[in-house]
Length: 39
Image (spheres, rainbow, N blue to C red):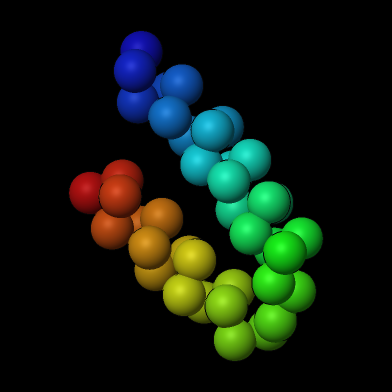
């Protein structure tokens, strides 16, 4: 259950970062970071 709660929160954090730094180079970095956090 905790893992399910973490996923939407991570999505919200990604949205905030994307709003602050709308750079194409950051997208792959965030995806890589999110994948590491899940595993």
